[in-house]
Every structure is written in structure tokens, then in C-alpha cells.
Amino acid sequence: MTTSSPNHPTLPAMPGSWSDRVKLLRQSPWVHSLGRFLALAVVFGFFAFWVEGGKFYSPRNLENILRQSAVYATASLGMTMIIISAGIDLSVGSMIALTVVTVAWVLDLHVTTATAAGATETVYLAEEYPLLIPWLALLAGVLVSVLAGLCNGAAVVGLRVVPFIVTLGTMGIFRGLAKGLADEKDIYPHKDTWLTQLMDPTLTSQDPTWRMWILPPGVWILIVAAVAAAMFLRYTRPGRYMYAIGSNEETARLCGVPVARIKILTYALAGLFAGLAGLMQFSFIGGIGQPTSAVSYELFIIAAVVIGGGSLMGGQGSILGSVIGALIITILYMGGQQMGWPKWVQEAVIGLIIILAVVIDRLRQREAA
Image (cartoon, rainbow, N blue to C red; front, side, top):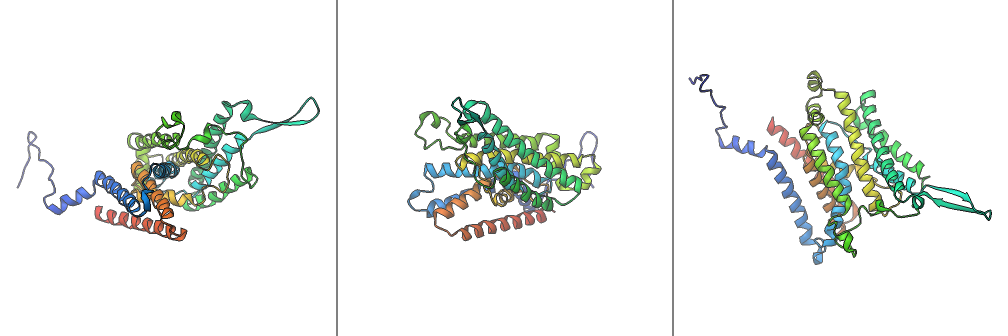
């Protein structure tokens, strides 16, 4: 029988069998991250090989992949937090559309004045205040999305209804508000501003000054936002509370976690990231307020989180994994287009990958248990 003394404490036993060590290695976060990078490389390599003429890995196409995935990835930052806390948000695509329309509406603000000759003249505020109006449009677009996220969180907590039902309803509400604000037609701002250029190509630009950005400004916004979100989840108390709530809400409540406040904060942060994604979408579609924009984006965004390792049961997920998932979704979508796949094939392939990701997550949970 082994004994220990105060001067010589017994060390914790290491797993003795080879299978135990392999199991611990498979459960390592570093191994999971490596696996996602490997999946990304495999998907990219597949299309790089099969798309004719090397078009898939041309600088223009690589930049287009980054530009499109930036919208999904930015919105997935907030969705990651929601899924970690065992929630879901089906309204994120509608929030993106509401942001797009709000930005265009502010940029298109104008007044009608009478001239000395008795005629009328339309004066666009973006021309009169070229520095102020774009910033007001940015703040208004992001603020609207944050308020929408707050409404989601307050409804989930206050009504005590499952997030799926709440956000299914607000998905229609926010989309309806976007269409109402735009009077059910696209808004074309009278003047282009720097908001329109957020997602303009840089590597293939003819402007040497613009090429100095290396990546579009929207992609830089994504990088900064992703780093901030990852640090928030890892190093702040609310971020750790999100994992605790997703793992076991009742236990977290008994341990003193303010569950209601954290849930509302989570949905508000998701609204913030959806607003940033809306700014990128506004630029990506050419600087117009399109109320039908971002239809079905919620499926791609949720898929990005799930493919990136987020568990729909809660308690698991990472920012890096979600960004990789967004890249995989975009590569599948754009690669399928360039190979001439029908749209139904593209959607079927993405749906199959989502199912496989969920199955892998369930198997991983069983193994850990």
C-alpha cells in the first residue's frame, strides 16, 4: 500500500495505458484546432485541384473568399457566444439586413429647399457633411443591431421561451422592419463614402495607396474583432460565465452566476457583431440598402460555428474554430459555383457537412463522458 507524507506528497497518477494517452491527446484543444486547419486545407486543396486553369487560387479569387467569409465570420463571433451559452439566434441574417438598410437610409438623408427663383432643390446631407454623416450612418447601423440583440435577450429571459422560438419570431420582425424602412425597395445613397469601400479589393486594386492596406479594411475589422472576442471569452468573468451557463445552467445559477444578465449581454454582443457584419455586407453588395440582403445567412453562420467545433448542446466553442468554419463554408460555396455545381448540390453538400459536424461533436462528447 502506497503512503504519502507531508514532505513527500503522492503525485497524481498519469494514464498508464497507451489508449488512455491517445484519448487525452484527441481531447486536447490544440489537436481540435489542428484538425480544423486540416479540414480547411483539404477542402481548399480539393477545389484548387479540380477548378480548371488555377483560377481557384488566383489572387483575385483568394481575396474574394476573404471578403465573402468576413461577413459570415464576423457574425459568427456573436453566434459562437450564443451557442456556447446553449442558445441559438435565427434572426442574425435579418439583423444584418436591418443594419444594411439603416446605413443606406442615413446616407441618403436629404432635405428639399426653395431657391431664389421659386424652384425646389434637393440637398443631400452626405454632401453637406461628408465627414459627419458616414459616422452617423455607422453608429446608427450598429446601434440598431445591438438593440435588436437586446430585444432577443430580453425576450428569452423575460418570456422564458426557448431561444429557437423567440429568434424565429424576431427573424420576421427585423426583416419586416428593414423592408418597412426601405419602403420595400432598394435604397441607393446619392453619394459614395468610405463605408462603401470597406470591402473593396486591395491586392488587385489599381490604386497603389489602396494596395498598401494589403487586405480590405473589413477583413482587418474582422481580425481585430476576433482577437477581442477570443480574449473576452478566455480572460473575462462574463466570458467564463457563458461557458458555465452552457455546460449546466442550473449549476451555474446555484454557484452565483447572474444567468439572466449574462444571457442578455450575450445576445447584445451578438447584435454588435451582426452590426459589424452588416457594415461589411453593405459594402460587399455595392453600397446599397437592400432589405432582401443576407437571406439564409443565419444557416451559414450557425454552420460555421458548428463546423468550427461549437456544440449545439452548449458549453463548447471557440472563436478560431468559428472563423475557420466560415472559411470552409465560403470555400464550399464559391468552389461549387466555379465547378458549375447546381445550387441545390451546393446546399446539399453544406447541409451534409453540418450533419457530419454535429455527429462528430456527439461522438466526442460520448468519448469524453
